[in-house]
Length: 425
Image (cartoon, rainbow, N blue to C red; front, top):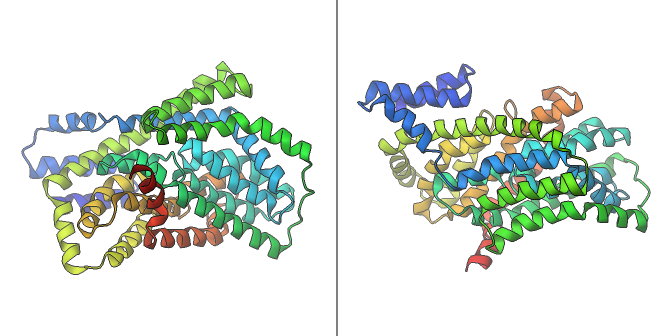
């Protein structure tokens, strides 16, 4: 039955059927044809699969990201980073990378980070004399930090399907996120210097003080979210609610760039995004029901262990599969389908599941800028007016940086595990 369901799923996806519908149809047909399970069980499974406390964080982080976009947080973060680095070669690009890193620490979404930071900086960089390809390429790739630096919606989903601590996953993403940020900054500087982009005049002490003061409320957001989780004040799910409330207070009463009239649109946009994610999750969990009943994870684990004994080779295979999957599926779907399988394969080899979660998340970063389904490419294309193929080519130099970072984290697990081990041991 499982083989038939996999083949049917592949046919539906190749036909262009949305991932959620493909998963639901393939699974329902498989259950109807090959089992005696009542169809009522299917509908029950769809609803009960969403009864999870960690999953409650998803709609709240989606809502928080939309609140931050509207409340003027992104503009102040850009102003802050720009006044400190604009006199360096590629200063605006570096400001964009740093802005994405900070915004990532409060949004949990990669496309939202590209929209918030890239939507402002891409036109500004072009106006300042940067090549459009350079501006679009760096912003599309820097936006991927939105799912690596905590909070991260893909990490929440991975923790849900593998029963791992979302808090530990969040903390594990900090050092790899900072490492990738530094690598993107250095790459931006080297390319800008080689191309001879003009530097801007250094900011005055007054300008820096003003920008820092204006950004202070926004800078408190990642401290509240990550600090609260680290300090045991609240769970990651509760942190998502705190982020929403803090974003509302800052947007309405501190920055005054959001009004109560903006709330209906913010709520509607968040509901659309959340409903899409939850539909995919419920259908994927139904698909996982077949995998569990057919014992596919156990069989796959035994097959891999009998043919590939070395953990480093298993990680190579996992990375290759994830990179290919990232070309055709969005991150949530990949994690829901492949996360439990890879967890079952790597557990007997002693590969830390938290480390595996970071590896999968970093693969999802690459998938965000890989055609034909890379969401960041479409967002950057919409912002810049460039065609998808042009955006993909422009993103290539920085995509290689993402792959290098993935390789380093894959084979130096302490980069991801050092901070969680220090906190929880």
